[in-house]
Length: 285
Ligand SMILES: C[C@@](CO)(OP(=O)(O)O)[C@H](O)COP(=O)(O)OP(=O)(O)OC[C@H]1O[C@@H](n2ccc(N)nc2=O)[C@H](O)[C@@H]1O
Ligand SMILES: Nc1ncnc2c1ncn2[C@@H]1O[C@H](COP(=O)(O)OP(=O)(O)O)[C@@H](O)[C@H]1O
Image 1 (cartoon, rainbow, N blue to C red):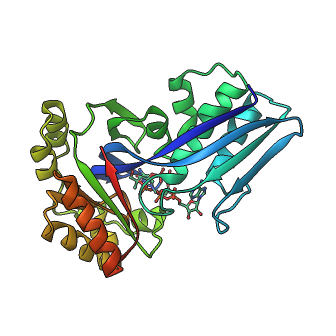
Image 2: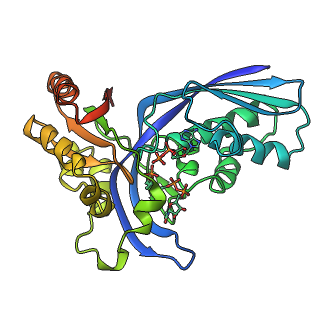
């Protein structure tokens, strides 16, 4: 096999709580992670010329070691002393710096691909153990599906998928750095915490109503005051029949959950017309 085509899917956080700040600066979290059907496309090729070469359709993304796909390939190729080369063609569709784990998912897909194309023989669990060195969300992106994520995001318990619904994904014209958001979070002063255990139960019972009723993201306390446009998008969704609307991860992407696809389509049209969101997608779950 000389070439593999991979899909790297985005995630949303249906619930995100921070338990405490650790000594090393990282935060202990409890999150409900849901992979969604919005993806980047990656083509991975073996090449006789040694080294890693990255190309991408987004001119502002790095193609050197600063790109997570480069780091993912390097991590495995160095450990297993792969002497031939790898070419990585990355087509981005997932909004960048958006709270949707785009870079982490690209890295996860490349790890899976490198393992296959160079016959490294690593299990999923072994890939996940290595993935956390690239980013806290990478193990989940290797596992995929739906999960409770604890620790710094790498301790995963698989859960049933969220019940069928339509999702509107809306990313405003701003980029938000995860480091900035965690860096400005006052973890010990949080007044409200989302009911993550309640969401786990709702998923196990297959109740979309209960899942939505218990949604909450403590990182909104940092990102929303800094970027009021997030609240604007949430309000537009809620005024137009969204069962719930929340920021994903560190933001600024907002997702809205709709029972009826026609309403979700109308909200997409409205958000595009109003201009608050730059990238708007309708995703069926
Ligand atoms: C907030 C979340 C929610 O899923 O996602 P995004 O908004 O980035 O998509 C994650 O916790 C983000 O995970 P990820 O983006 O992989 O984080 P990393 O690259 O490992 O870390 C980026 C920076 O975020 C902070 N960080 C990250 C994870 C964590 N549990 N505690 C932290 O404090 C650290 O300051 C770190 O330097
Ligand atoms: N493959 C990649 N896709 C997107 N961003 C990347 C990638 N590799 C490195 N980056 C850098 O990582 C930053 C965060 O990207 P991203 O993973 O999209 O954010 P988030 O974790 O909020 O979902 C970007 O600003 C970008 O410069």
